[in-house]
Each structure stands twice: as C-alpha cells, then as structure tokens.
Amino acid sequence: MENDELVQNMLLELRRGVLSIAVLSQLGKEEYGYSLLKALSDLGMEIDQSTLYPLLRRLESQGLLQSNWRIVDEARPRRYYVISPQGRAVLSKLKKEWSAMAATMHKMLS
Amino acid sequence: MNLIDKYITEVGKHLPRRNRADIEAEIRSTLEDMLEERKQSPSDDAAVIELLKEYGAPRKVAESYVGPRYLIGPRMYPLFEMVIRIVAAVLFGVMLLVFGLGLIGANLSGPEFLKTLGNSALSLLNGLIVAFGNIVLVFAILERVLPAKDFEKELEDWDPKELASEPEPDSEAIGGPGEQIVGTFFLILVLIVLNVYPEWLGVGFFDEGKWVIIAPLLSEAFFSYMPWINILIVLQIGFGIYLLRQGAWNMASRIANILLELASIALMVVMLLGPSLVDMTPEKLAGTPLADVADFFSKGANLLPWLVLGVVIIISTIEAAQGVYRLFKSSPRSPYPVIK
Image (tube, rainbow over all chains, first blue to last red; front, side, top):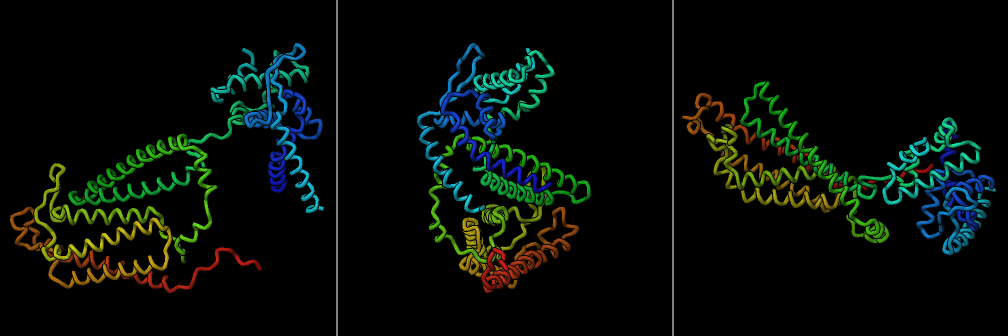
C-alpha cells in the first residue's frame, strides 16, 4: 500500500516533467484547452484540467505558445492555443534531449 | 445566477485581479465544453454538480493558476527564523533582568513574588508578540521588495573557493547564536552598571518606582580593580562577537577562550584575597530602616563576594578545563556512516 503511494507520487513527478514537451508537440495546429485535453488523452497522456490550463498559461508567458479568443463555427468563444516560432525552436531541442534521455534510460533499464 | 456562475465567482475570489477575468472566461468555456461533450445542459443542476465536483474545489482550482503564495518565502525564511530566535533570546534575557530588579525592591512573600513573576511573564509575552509582529512585517516587505534575481545571482555566484577562508571547524559548532548574544548582552550590561551606575549596587528599596540607596555595597578596593575588570569584559565581549561571526570553534578561538577564562580566574582570586570588596559595616546601616538587622546584613554582604566570585571561579575553571580537553581531543570523526 505504502509502495503504491510512492509509485504514484514518482509517476506524478515523471509525468510533470514531460508534460511541457507533450503539450508543445500537440500544438502544431490550433487547439482550445478542452480539445487539447481530449487529444492528449486519446494518445494515452491523461492530464487533469487543473494541470493543463495553468501549464498553457505558463508556456504562453514564456513565449512558447500564442493564444487568442475566437468564435469558430458559431460555437461559444474559446481560447485557441498554437505553438510560437520560439516554441518550435525549443521543442526541437527538447525532442533531441528527450531522445538521448530515453536511449540512456533504455540502456539502464534493459 | 446558475451554479456555474456561482462556481466561477468563487474561483475568482482567490485569483489575482490582474488576470481574473481571463481565467474565469477560460474556466467557463471549459466547463461548457465538458457539459456539451456529455450532452448535458447547464440548467441540469444534478449534472452541473457532478461536473463541478469533478473539476475541483474553487480554492484548489485557483491555486493551480497562482501557485503557492507566501508571506515569507523559502529564500527569506532561514534568516527570519534566525532573527526570531535571537530576538526571543534577548527578550528572555531582558525579562530575567527585569524580574531580578523587581525582586530587589519587592517583598519576597508568596503573593508579591508571584505578582512580580506574573508581571515579568506578561511583559515578556507582550514584548514577544510585538517583536514577532514587527519582524514578520519587515520580512514580508523584504520578501516583496528584494528582487528574486539578486537572491538567485547570489546563489549562482557562490564560489566553493570561499570555503578555504572559512575557519577549520573542529569538534563542534558554538552554541546557538541566541546563547552567544544573551551572554554578550549581559556582559555589556555589567560593564554599563559598574562604570556608569555603580550607585545601583547597594542596599536600598524602591520608592514610588525609584531605587533609593541606603548604603553602597562595593568598597573602594573593588573599584581599584575596575581597569582590569573593564579590560577583561571588553575582551570577552569582543571574543563573543568574533565567535558569533565565525559560528564554530577553531584552534585559535579555543586557546583565546582558555586564556580569557584563566585571566578571569586569576583576577577573581586576587580580588578575593585582597582587601574586602564590600563596604557594608553595621555602622553604615545605623540610622537606616535596616539598623535592627545591621549585623546580619553586614555579615551577609561580606559573604557575598565569596559566594558570587566563588561560583564564577568554579564555572570558569570547568569551562577552561573543558576547553583544554577539547583542544587536545582527537580530530572529529567523519559525519558519514562507514559503508560495510
């Protein structure tokens, strides 16, 4: 029981570390918050909305995302997010780092 | 106003004004998207309640946007804690002093003693609350005024080479800074009283809040030692401040401490063996309210130097011996456990 809690906490830390890359990777095209949540979930990356929205704001304040409020297809106003040029450059570097890290971890764990 | 409106208002109460409207709009949009996907209506209270329960308590949702907020944050807290400890120790020292002075003029019967003790405790409590409030206020302002970048820069600029100029720590750190400060504070107090207010030391009583002296306690012989007493006290104050700055004993400070203790013991022994240090004869008490007990008082006063200096000599001898023992003790063991 105690170990389960430890594992859960560690997984949480692990996921928190990769969320930024996951979000940046899925915003090559415009998405609003809830549609992004669903897209990530469909790909197997379950994320809580209380984590996603603050993260989107943080990434935007860092200049990695751009956003605007729009009404699309006569729906209600929604805030759409898309990766910025700076975000693309950062994502490209992060991808390389991630690949190297994943390879290292694979070597360690196999 | 429906439940979603009320929920968003509640979340907004915990959000900074600057981007409250924007965050509120986004939460509303998300909640409506979630309802739409579930094919439920905002007017269906049961569905909305279930949705809001899932979304989370308003305070928790707001916290996820603003992060933890501190009155005094992690960067300032260690310094804040140190200042609080020092101030508390000094206030405690002052309280003991006030309590002691209160006892001098007080009738030492049970109720009077308890009253003096109670007043001193209340003064301490009052002082602690006022000091704590002021320190918190100052640190809360510093937390908001001092740029975080300066603090980060200081951490980044830290150079391990600086450790080389630090003193070699031996077996133990000095006592807490509070202990050192209280000790230094009392030495300063003794220095001031002996040099500026020697008339306070004598037999007297409090009359309408003023200390009225009947007969001075100390003799001229005592005051002839004042230059030596002053030198030793000033050296001890300086040494206390040095120790406080260093934070740990080293070879030089241990030797200095032993020398100071030995010098103090030598002076006290010379003072005890010389002419009487008190000048309280029955004749001096004649005509005072203490005339009836003049003999008893005079004998008691003449025993006082032996009692006080005797205790101080014993303590100083023990401390000097401890200093010598620690000086020659083997070097400290590694703080890390041995891996077997």
